Image (cartoon, rainbow, N blue to C red):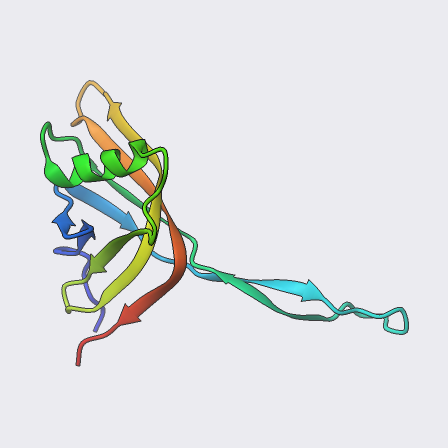
Length: 135
């Protein structure tokens, strides 16, 4: 049976980010290196390096919300921490994505007449994201 996204959480370090309305999932990709030689009429490739991709988090801005402040603080750093800060997405079933990440964008204040103030952040995954399903 399909699992609902309701009750999915996002943490930066050990701090839960509140007021989230959407988390865009992890989509790792793999590069390729061309191996075609001049005696072939079709291009050939081999696997290249893997990239963990990016994650974006969206929600309602709330003054003083510690998780939102942690994302902004991480963005404001001139030198990223080494190793990158831990990020965890936890699904209702208990399954998790855990990864090191660098906050690359932070936005507050989409203000519309009939809507709540919004915040969003983008996190570039550094290294291998680890998916763990609970049994």
